[in-house]
Image (tube, rainbow, N blue to C red; front, side, top):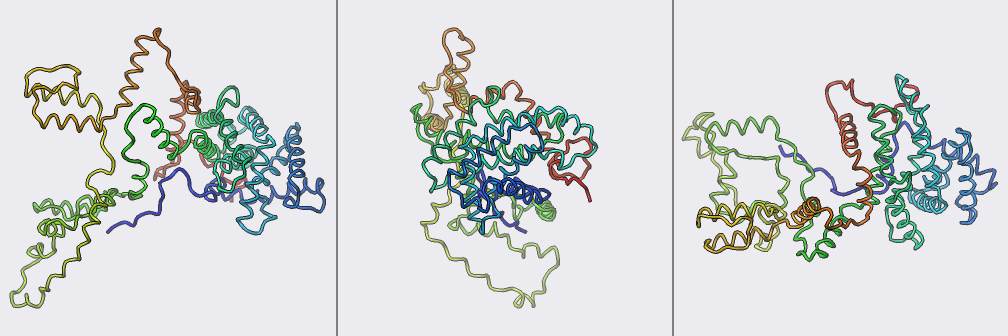
Length: 497
């Protein structure tokens, strides 16, 4: 039986509300009321008898500055209360709102206000202190069972930073000019060296490796990974920015424009292609034993169905071969009495109406994007052709076609049209710089991608292994994972039922 298609959109992120809800777990629900209580307790002493939504912008800035000063106290518990009050502001002061739209409006307003007042820099310093807190790390290592209470400070800080990054990253049509300027400034700030001369994403990668090495098992890894992903997406760009960079790069190198957008092609494909069921596999094996073609070959591998629709204009023989009527197997079950055939045999159903010829162009055959060949492939093809028709080769020459038949000329022309030339050019430039390092200097543009790569390069293998460990620990399995890392430390309640 056919599996239903999934309601899945191939993109960088989901809607804003869905992305914000991904941050929290069910065990954190009581903390929403706790954040509100700490905010109201401190806010009453500042503005008696008034609500946050009733203050002017200048009064709101004054109160945020007061919270920033309170973050610098040495008392850990007081800092946590202030951080929870800031988190309540970033969550949109939901107790003073009536609808979800109002909560999102005030959350966006408060987030830009907090960023303009310099809250992110203060949070970054507190996060660095928590990461380097050896006492908390050693205490978590010694505990037999880690729960939600072991990562309270980290969870609050990471939640505020995630709300800042995700809310500012999403650009709205009605954003004010100062908000658009703040968005670009925040984007450049995250991509530049913030802490110890390293980008912010590199600090989060360090948290991942520290967690996977069991030196800090209390780190809330779900929040770290979400913040890391949104930081990279904000600073480096997503699918749309990548396509724009490809177009600009090809235009700068005087290359022809891209014939297709691979992301748009993938979005139009089927969301999932599950493997065939056991009954379908048995049926196919039985059909093969009878020496007949399988009735439904590769029934589940239909990711390209939207591009390779059945052609209604093919001949009737091919259509009959695909439909494979059931009466061909009736000889195995038993012969039918000739006197009863007039009762059993029904007239064939009328053929379906043909679609107009204009629809045929909507379903091109073959892969939905053009293939790519290397320069080496063209050289190998010409070398084989010259040995066959001429008897000698010309080395790496891909332009001389003297003595070769006309079909070879057309083949070489087609291969050059779909050749991937930028990559070989980069490889040749790299080989030249390695061989003649003193004769020239490599020109590298200082982009956020380049700065992040330079910071990750010394420990790149460790980051890959750490991410692989997290992936394996999160993958479902029927066996108990006794030797894997515990990724549920930030969702287990303090007192297990």
